[in-house]
Length: 139
Image (cartoon, rainbow, N blue to C red; front, side):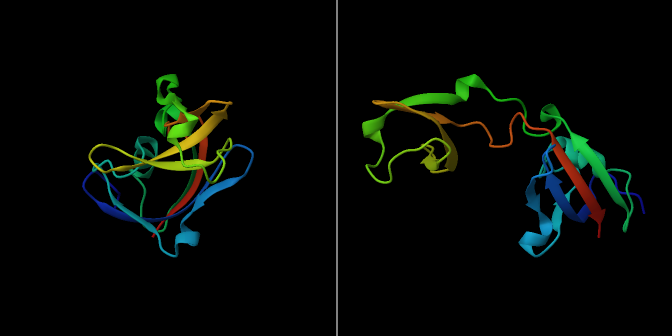
């Protein structure tokens, strides 16, 4: 049976950056990734790469930023006054904060810059702008 829109699939996967660094692996979650084709539950390029495969089939593919999490949007980098953040821990570049939207949704924000009076937070997805390489198996 060939995978098509509307099918539910289970996939074992390993995701790496171009330098070979692993950014995600279904083995570390202890179970395969399960999603429905066409339901927009995974990034577009990943879903497109699975269509046409069969159970037991393995595949390797590379996604550009446009097929994955997009390119970084400079409008999503915001400077906020340092005194609006908790005093501890001291803000540092790379640290991730969890912000809340007015609706209560949690939004991760990475600290991009720290100056004397402000902290710049980046609301882009952490994988935005990155090529993503996948090795997958349909289970």
